[in-house]
Length: 255
Ligand code: G3H
Image (tube, rainbow, N blue to C red; front, side, top):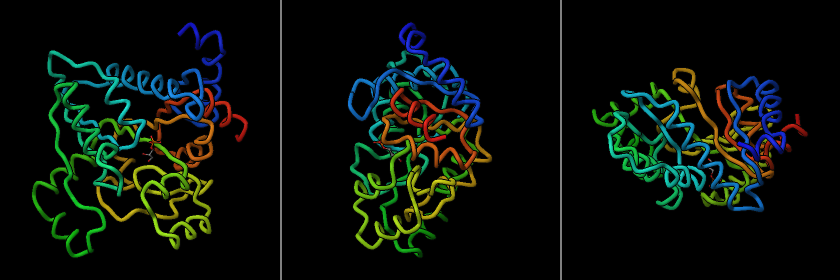
C-alpha cells in the first residue's frame, strides 16, 4: 500500500472509478506487458479482494485466462471451508485446458475448500447437440446458478490476442476487424462503444445475465489491454476493476 500511495495510485483509482462509474478500482504498480510481477500483483490483489467480499452461501462464477489462473494460484489454501460454490462462467472457448474456466474454478474451489460444479461441454458442438446438452437437468441447474452468481470474476483481452489464442480462422479475424472489435471478455467481442459485435459459439453466461448477478469484477492489466478494458466496461455491467498502473494510466489517456 505504501508503494501505491507513493506512486499516486490511490488518486488514479479514484479518477478511474469516477470517470467509469465503477464502485471500486484497484490499481497495482507496474505494467504486465513488460513485467510478469505486475500480473502476479494483480492476482494477489484480486485474491485479497475475493477473501474480503465472499460470504458463506454465495456463488462465485469465474472465467479462464492466464490472469484468472494466476488469481487461483494466489489464493491461500484454507483449512476451514468457506461455504461458497465456485462455477465456471462459460464452457470451453477453444483454449488450452490450464486456461479454461473449468480448471480455474476447480483450483479456486480446492484452495477455498468450496463446493464446485463444472460445465463439461466440448467447443463447437452443432446446435442440436447444444440444445440436447442444455436440456439436461444438471446443466440447467448449473446455468441457473450462473445467472444468479453473487460475484462474477472475469478476465479481459484484446480482440486480436484472443482471436489468435482461440485459433479463429482468417475469415473470422477479418470479420472482427471489420466490426471494429477491440476487446474480449467471456467469449464476447466488443467494439469501442461496448457493443457486442461477435460471439464465440459456446454457452453459459450471456451478456444480459450480468444484470441479474451481484458484483461483476473485471481483472486484467498491461498497457495493451487499456482499450479492451474500456470497451468492456462501456457495457456498464461491471462494478469493480482490478488492474495495473500500465493499463490504468493508458485508460486515463484514452478517456
Ligand atoms: O477473456 C479474456 C482472457 O481470458 C484474458 O486472458 O488473462 O490470459 O490475458 P489473459
